[in-house]
Image 1 (cartoon, rainbow, N blue to C red):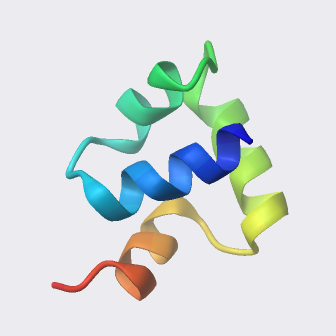
Image 2 (image 1 turned 90 degrees about the vertical axis):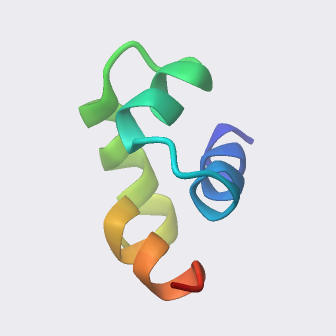
Length: 54
C-alpha cells in the first residue's frame, strides 16, 4: 500500500523521493528505494521518466 502511494506521489507531484519516502512512513529513503525497486522493477527516477509526461 505504501509503495502505491509512492507511485502516485511520483506521478502527481514534483516532491523529491526522499520527501515522499518520509511522508509515507519510511524513516530512511534508502530502505524505501530498495522496497520500491523490488516491487516495481524500476528505480524511482526510472519510474518518473517512464510514467510522468515531461
